[in-house]
Image (cartoon, rainbow, N blue to C red):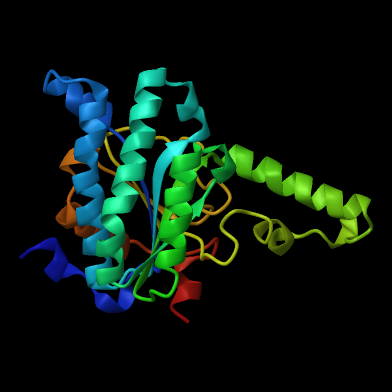
Length: 247
């Protein structure tokens, strides 16, 4: 029996987040430069997105480029940006065909002009799609996001638009990049690394974590389904005890 057949359609996570890791190591294993791994990682993105939509996932967030990634060698950053532009341009038709809406979170204004333009056009041209939302995290880090949110809230307090005493969890959530997007219930990381890497730290407070040794270019929809089966086998208590959940 395939993992897809084991999935309970009634217990799907509403939102799955993915840290796509291992492109560089995958390329190195094949005697290629890191960019070769990023290029082949696009196939994994396509298959994972289509696989998620196929079973009814409503939100899929993919960590494509962190704020720390700007510190990588210039040739790799330039290649990644060029790949991002060409991929967004090529995949827009596929997104529309599959009724998938594109969104993006992060410091988008830091992206190169051409990249930012292609991204905004794709977001606009897919905005009416309703089957699933694909969220790309670009030039994103959770610490940057939280710092940005705190600055916005502090400015409103300074201008007497908000009372400091009124700030609560909901206030913070409304000033994050993910405003309007439900928190992930499942976070997947590939490549065998066991860390979160500054990704959605606020939002994954109660997410189930799933780690796989698969390097990202080898990841396919059946691997996604395996992660979802694992998620469905867990008991989600949100700070309560098992007996409370059964009542």
